[in-house]
Image (cartoon, rainbow, N blue to C red; front, side):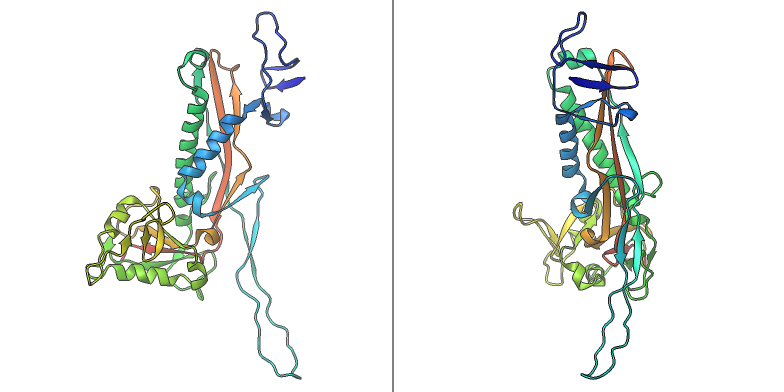
Length: 327
């Protein structure tokens, strides 16, 4: 028996039994949303298509730390200080040392949704798989929206992007936790006229050495086009092209990730990020995209209502550095 419940339909049917005036029901593998929410069966191939496109198209998702959660009330603890030690002689007393301080990270959550429709005649007669095509289109749009939110989201019904975090020019030892460090480019709205690559080197070494293992550059293609023209005093380009799939393009020895959501170079803009995003940025998501196939509420159209709950926030503010285009 296959039980199907929704706001517009409730009943129990025998799979494969023909009912006069209706086509025979075909039993398929389905996932079910909670009955109280009026869920319908979700074709597995649509769900898989959306998830696959998201992983391929969202650049921040590919470098950040991603966790799967069961609700919007996800919290993560992080230590902001380490254990303090000291030297003593063999018989000297051992005074109590400081214990680590903790901070709670609660990534803001939001819900992405899409509700495209196709007529039943198109689904029946089209010369291509409309459901797969709609799944890919939804996936691309979800990836675009996520990419913007992970970079610059304000945290209101969406993730809080790393560019929305507070910033300061002070170093890790004196900067408040949760505040990202900035390094000036040397000129307002651009790079310094002489030796502009020196500020990029400053940005690299503003990041503590434990974080530089696995660090990447994040910028958009327009900013990268400027940097690709930088040369050392002997005429060598500081940007190195990738020679194969296992050897990505590098800048000063670190991989470059192009994110279209990063701002163009402008006065006081934060157009370049450098850091270890696995340690520095947290993405919290539900385990799956929920797709409701609804052929009933708007006949003769079939709606594919897709939702996905995603959150994001800076996890460790010492792991990401930003370049501010200021003098």
